[in-house]
Length: 123
Image (cartoon, rainbow, N blue to C red):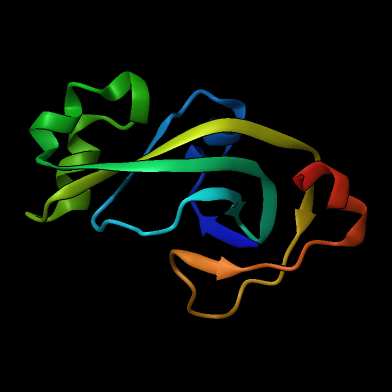
């Protein structure tokens, strides 16, 4: 299963449903159910349904309630590049976070094999 690496506290906000857009500097062709990974753990799943943009930090700042990042963070993160909003739906937090093997150097996406005990939770 595809796993998206997200820093804290944003990863927890995503699986709780508080954060509905993930801001990135690139588009992605990935769609469907993905894992949210942070600090070596799978926290839950969401559906990546769309990519919106490009946006400037100023434009994205108007949607703070959806992405939860303040303007200064957006400006620093963009470093003059365009930003995109990855639209996330149907968040589901695992009852217990699951340790996963993230290859060294991975920064955005990784393919993850979840233990069989989670088979029912990821369907």
